[in-house]
Length: 306
Ligand code: GYE
Image 1: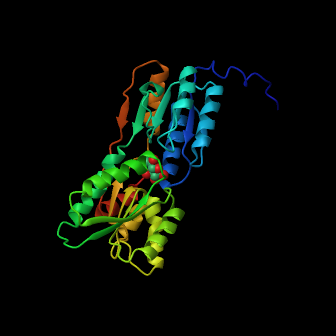
Image 2: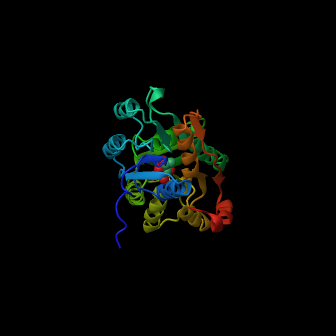
Image 3: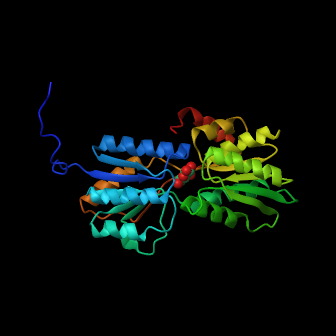
């Protein structure tokens, strides 16, 4: 039942858009939802997607981008695992006349000509929302409020920005003390491990601020194993708003969650099509997102998509 040859050639003559996408990894529930959104949206839009998973390593992402350049994709999109160190490879893409779209995370490059657009959340704002909640929650408290912080991947935009936004929001009152802060690499396993260490080294922890839900969920396990009640003995504020965190909130284990929307696929396809067609696009497209109390999370849970 051979159908003959002739389908393998003409890769670029069918007018189809080809996007090379270099994903961070599969470190969290957020990331899984983001990957699925991009893959589904590509299918729906009839876009050929070349997908690479960097396993949270910049060198892998750089390799993937170089291979996309070699394959002459129409557009390169990527979510940079860390903020710095991209200029060389992005210049290579520019020299090859392949436009680059940043999704989710930003680069700190001074050269604005190295990418056409950045689609994603405002992480400083997210950190600020977490801090603002804390300030309100403890408005009546007179003693010290000891906070431990689980940071995201070192050098990543969301870790840098969620840390600074939060610090800014709480700096007005010296009773808020960040007594320990360490990276949990945005994973459950690391979140648990680092929280275990915090529980051993810190005599009094009032609040955990986790830069994402997966680390908060790992930390909840550590807190429970230490015989304490998450959400009560230690208040927890986190970022992302994934389903598992909403379940934990409905059980009273997380007190406040700042939403970060991973469903960027449709917007990315639209952007890439415009870029390919030579249309001008906005340099910065921010994602709309809210916040959730346990009551709101419980109500949203049945229809939560990720
Ligand atoms: O918050 C975290 C993921 O870059 C916004 O990366 C993203 C973050 C998200 O691992 O869960």
